[in-house]
Length: 107
Image (tube, rainbow, N blue to C red):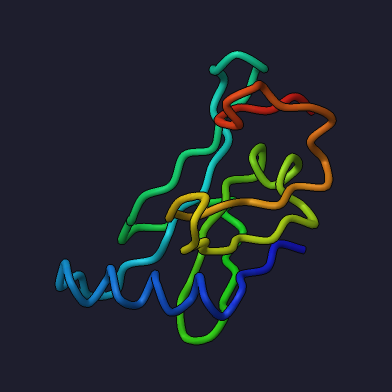
């Protein structure tokens, strides 16, 4: 299961309202690349693909394709806003390692 924290839900809603995007959802995927092998990619989409896993949380929807979901199962999407920086972060129990900068991971 993939989950979204209330803080991340609030930020997604804020971004959707700011961009005035109707019927959109957040798409999260794993792409090859980065120092450790895989990176996360997130963006808004308005059309689901066949085989997408659709997760609803707090009034927002998240779509994850089948291949990415195998790497993201059990993960939590959060939004950090502190001294260490601001942005979305994925806590992924399937990641076995990450690069020094934290932008990519190994699974």
